[in-house]
Length: 264
Image 1 (cartoon, rainbow, N blue to C red):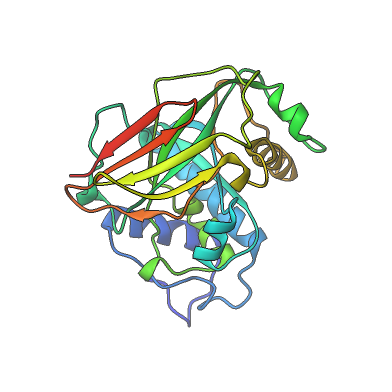
Image 2: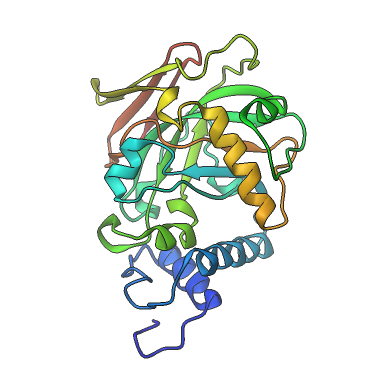
């Protein structure tokens, strides 16, 4: 394991976090051990890690936004959104139980999800322009799983950790964006039959469309673009709830249907 005496690099961070994921063993925050660790180094580590994922056979299928809601920012003690990668191995098929035995300390959160019909490339993308690239809108639940001890991290830490990516599931109801007021799209979060939280799409930067524009513009800084067919998870609408074997979590949306997951 890398220690305080080691000469840190983004490559070491990427390998350390992938190893922590594979071993289901959390590690201490990188920022506490590498004083010069910043967002640039964190995004380099994130990109290096996804290249390693692709090299071992995974396929990039989209991106996920993190920390786009006040609730999530408050929960994680940060104040800036971030972006990360989704691969095909992270998607759960409907009816598939969440494999908690392969995770460290999973949590679930409801999301509004976009499926892109055309490429979206920054910079300078507005929310209105971003929505022109959306083919459909779906509801979803993301299962996040930080590789850091106690789910405690700085913004560079979580960016390097691919925004705590783990698994996600989307609903079967796909709606065209026209006619949907996503800022007013409501969601009830239910855990084991009890409603524990609620929110509307306005929790996501005022409107999930702003999160999509943010993603395009942030990727442009790295010479990349959102591709047609990709899914975009716009960020947790509510605080994330812990998942334990036997847990049942449901997200009930106003127009986007209901998504239910069970943990095993």
